[in-house]
Length: 544
Image 1 (cartoon, rainbow, N blue to C red):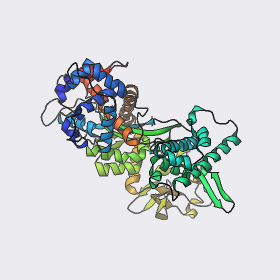
Image 2: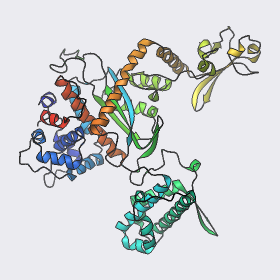
Image 3: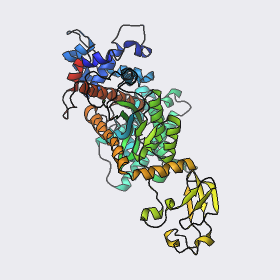
């Protein structure tokens, strides 16, 4: 009863009215279905198992306000509910409603500290190599055409021959071990695929066939993996070499999930997505300064760590690309932190400056150290040994000589400032070997624009301080949150196909984790280390 008493009705039916018709036979309340979905992820249940628990579990009946003899609903209702939310752009609704209720009670708020990290998510598809991917894509297109236009397909392709070749799924048999035979098989797939595409796009073919999703995927996959040259001698099909493949962000990894991509992080390859989790991490007791009222009656110790944002991307999106979107997401919920703890993958000097300027957020994060030969060797004069006079646009070397060249430039697509010392000054210098590796020229320095360079120098100086390192240790707690998300909700493996539904899954998982943490915090006991039934505990706590 505690969660219900503290937060009231979380998922009011009116909040989901946009996605549900007012006319027709009365169905299950979307608010009740949202609650069932949250409890489903709290126990990592399938749709069928969740519907079974609603039908026979007294704890869920009590939570949903049902009679003991209520027959419940068919498992397909949960799938239809998720589809409606995605179609109406309401994926964020459940987490928004929970965070709004928590903000009203001072459990989360802007300011303070938050931390963010990402982890990989495996798509709900099989990993396929290029040969298998071509065969399965063609097989999927043929299956779709066989269902949509069987008579046309029987006239367009040699069905008997192709049924033997493409009837079974590609993973149900072993491809040839010989490299030459595998190459020949890939070319056979390529020729058959072009034959099918020509038939679908023929003038006498029904125009709607080419609009089938499976046919569109086949066309894209063949453009990405094959060349075809048409001459008087006929059409020649060649397989693209690895260097000719499109970039990973554009390359399809499955004919069934067109949003999944190949990802690489810390030496691990996977097919699927990435999830970015943000959570509060204030260390001290938080009290509402305006009212003087404690956040939670009877709660001792620091406030609970609550998930404030979830972002799901395909596997190719880097952490640095998500730094600004994550802050936009938190700003939309009015939950921007004062200090944001991130690992080095999210940060650069430019982003540290931009987040402070645009959002007022201080990024607490390590930055890349000086990579000059002198800095790497730990000997000689690196950039920090030079005094920079930004107003005079001049640099002074450790021996007191000044630069003769200061010019803005663009290096690797980034704005920079190039500073040069005269070769006649550097050539007779007795410490030349400690300063530059050039045999004839003078020393050259490359700086970023003033504001960015000063922030970068300050951050590098801070990283060597033990007090800063102890403070940065706060970020490590997000690893425990990722572990809990994987262990409790099964977040490592996507349940559904497509980026939108996978994001919806992650959002409901975040709501489930927040309620588990709130329940543990209010009841004054730590989270269980073993996987006991959170559903049994939450079912009574969320009584309607």
